Image (cartoon, rainbow, N blue to C red; front, side, top):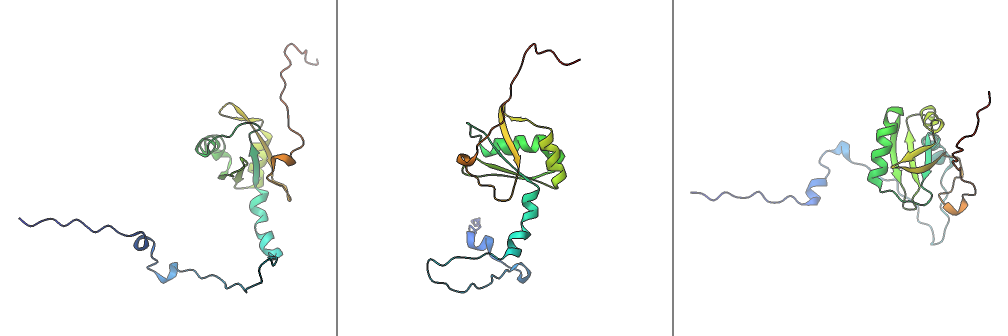
Length: 153
């Protein structure tokens, strides 16, 4: 009886090798600058990405860090139908929620405040110049329950 040969394992290099010329990419060669030089990003490159940020909102928990998979799961469950496109969680605890349009993002913001896993998540529309730094935040919304407060007639 002939021995059955096991297939040789495929190397990672073989798995990711580009086999079609239409899949190949080329990078533009950058000119060499001395160490310490300032890199200038052309304004048109910066402006090309502004549309993505205009339909994004920034979120964070004040004193809690929720795992990425939990944020992703909750956000998709409650906002996917409202045009949620992508969720990104940054190392510093800030989250970026990108929507298909500014209008759909605005609708989600208007329906707040929101709780994720019973924890209040603070949300705001992205603004040019926004800094992902908790030390730059000067005001926070506060929720208050006023039991027995008579409503105006």
